[in-house]
Image (cartoon, rainbow, N blue to C red; front, side, top):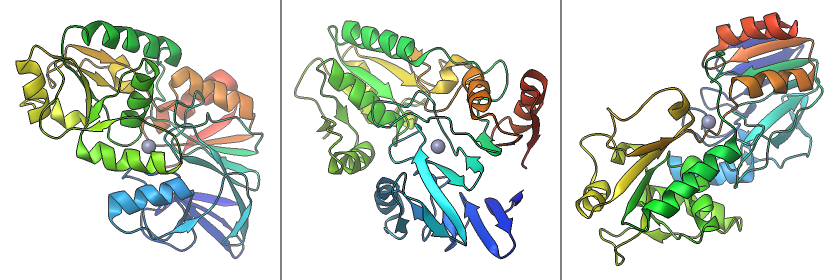
Length: 314
Ligand SMILES: [Zn+2]
């Protein structure tokens, strides 16, 4: 099978062809998840990703394909598996080739974890592919985060910045666990409604410009916290509130200068460096291709540490 990075990840064998995460609209494409850098119309995708496409691109145009049910696409037998990255996210298996897409072996509150599969060729994302990009264990991060929220919300408003699809809904699910029903901005609410359409049961209230309560939590997109801060943050801070940002990159970079925040938590929906390596070892492939982020660096580390032939697919 020929594998190249060209308008997506293209797999070709004789007359068969499928494009994974295509960069343009194609009939034989597979979209792994609903983040904007992956989302194009007309391709195959899971039903939740198709609904997310409808919300984010204004037109629900694509072909639904369920996890675990093989489908003939472009002459290949293609199967999707949970990727643990965001709600609806999928890894793609094409014969003996596994493409992880963006993935997380820990999964989350709103998506099943990515399980390793035996494969001959592994195409793996390498967002956190450098050795210094190690992330702390997810359960420790969530414990620290919830303890901080419980303490702060006794004092006043708590503003939480999280990417509007995926991270924001994870934060809502975590807050619900400690009995908090957060306010959310409109852009987060419309995506959260897709989750609830699938009975994920995220409990939130739409922010309508002010709070009826003195002490509350509110989930906003990260840009609300960037200086100069948005209105929701301005109101909270005026009333003695605090704010925090949640992203895997918080493990690596401080965001206290670019954002008006009092705390940051490294909650990631990707695999950290060690998790990436462990995942490769568990899939035990003969060949590894790395894509996205630190692809070159991660390929070097796979060869050095695991002795598996690896190269960046750029
Ligand atoms: Zn993503």
